[in-house]
Length: 584
Ligand SMILES: Nc1ncnc2c1ncn2[C@@H]1O[C@H](COP(=O)(O)OP(=O)(O)OP(=O)(O)O)[C@@H](O)[C@H]1O
Ligand SMILES: [Mg+2]
Image (cartoon, rainbow, N blue to C red; front, side, top):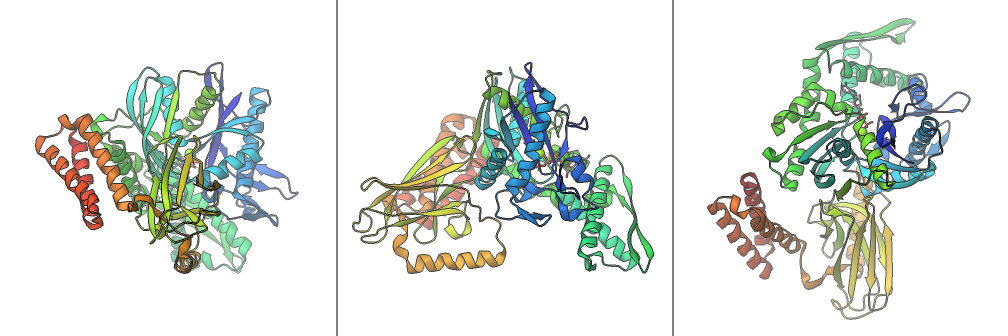
């Protein structure tokens, strides 16, 4: 038996296919949902789930929640004087889920499918996979949460052909995916999101409001308390009260937050007693709702599905229970979301369905997912050369050839980047490695082949080869340098420019001298030509003419290597295509 696990920022669930039906595991408290909280008791006993959550107020120093927010980073957390990686903490949660599943199904279980946000980076996926292995699982597959949600729907609607949009607003992450379901085959068309946006942010805003109210009423700034332990504990009490108030306001128009004995001054107890109306709350969090607009529009645009062609909107994640969030997405897509999908349970159910497919228990479903980001490498002049574009179907393998930029160049640094910016330094560094032992020739003559292999779990392996000498090196992208402080970032940038300046001989140039703008433009032309072939007859003749003309001007400007013109014509083509998308 393979289990499916939804490893969430705030809550986790585990499920499996039993007698052909996805079945959620009940934990020791008879619940399907286990808080993603880990802690140690006074005697050093490991606590996971509800019991850890319960001690968070009294012992914040030995309790850890929302670990998923730092997965894939180099950060550590400390409990009881010992440091842990985010993978180790996540492994404690996964291990508990493993034990719960073994008790529930009455047999040993050592294989799992684990879900991650669609917008998780490679490093975050890798860290999740590592956590699964530390917990004692063979991780059969990492799948995207919105894809899992769609699978839970598809399991019930196997015969259907439809376009789905999954809007997943959880505790720590926001994801949106557009998925096409064709009689049991799932094709993810596009995905977008934000890894650092979730219900936790709503709690922080409400807590800030409560802090301010307390200060107003008592003249005490709780941020200035000297006793660290007490400060942490007060923060935790307010944070929990804030989350409760937020949840109340999903059903009530007003709620009262009452925390007796929050603090005391010269033995005089100070209580917190504040009313919050839904209207107050909605005003405070408006920007967190608005922040989901662009990702939804981006995913819709990339999917090439028009609003009217959407058949169903699936809401996932606890945060979608907030009425204003539901209203926002309903208005934005002009479509009522499905009401019969359980927003907290459907991801685990979908993971169980995927596990069932993997185990050969369900053989009538197929899933095809996409890469969430554009990946490529740095080339000379701080330019970004894309190799795999966002929303490319995975697994996939893409290669591009480069040439050296110096005479008798011995080695080349392959700097792997993620992003959409033409300037290399404006994108995210994923890691770098050196290919040594190049065939030493005049500049422009040594050819280096760079290959990106994207596996089904969304994990990337980058290889560079000089076919002539047989020199080869590679990395599996693991290190995340994504969330550095500003000072670290500034230092890293300086390093980069000196390296390129002083040891420019290590850089590469794209073969045929094509700039990223030119490569990108060809990608757009390809898109536009496909569009005209597929749907050219559905749009009006004038627009069609404009598109054809722009393609031809763009082709000319590529031939003339006129980057400024390429840029402006690419933009124009994109605009025309999005107009055409609406019509076609
Ligand atoms: N009725 C409700 N109204 C508002 N918010 C809610 C409600 N119920 C749960 N939440 C919030 O939803 C979030 C948890 O949602 P969920 O369990 O889907 O997230 P998760 O799976 O842990 O996180 P992620 O998917 O981002 O990793 C928490 O922030 C919680 O406060
Ligand atoms: Mg979730």
